[in-house]
Length: 203
Image (cartoon, rainbow, N blue to C red; front, side, top):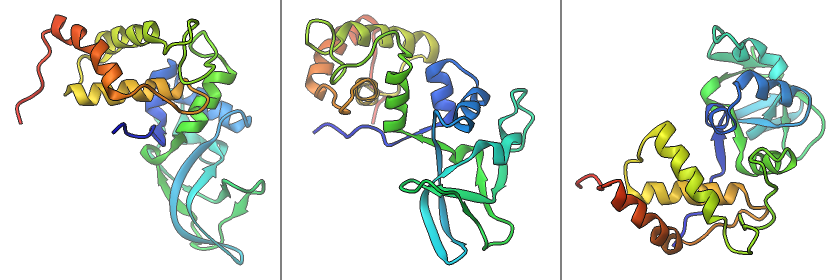
């Protein structure tokens, strides 16, 4: 059974994926072209009680996004926006706001997919389920991603982990979040693994 697509990506993961600094993503989010979210415990915003996933405004915690990397790793949010609302809610309790860590600032998988399609980040607009021009899955693109992965990050810890990564790769390029089944990827990945003399770690 295939796992569903990833729900969250950290800012650093997306910075590596897109080849851009995190400060650029903060700028895009500040201008409304990208949404950065985080999870918070219950807080009070006037008469409303808010908890769970909320959108943040990067300019409220701008020192965290310094391009030089000298900014703090934590900051207090004074306002948040619920994902299903347009207005910003100002935090009244706790009075100091809610503390968030840089590592807990995320981008939703659907938002990553939308942004990549709108801005054609990978040089082609995904049409459906990562399909190539011949109507099949973009296996050529997968081979390019495999080459990039080995060159930039090395080999994964296991074959199963690599298959899940590739399913995420396909899902992120699909308008519907679809991806090939594990068997289809494994059949094409196995010759590459043999050529690399890849072995799963002992259990």
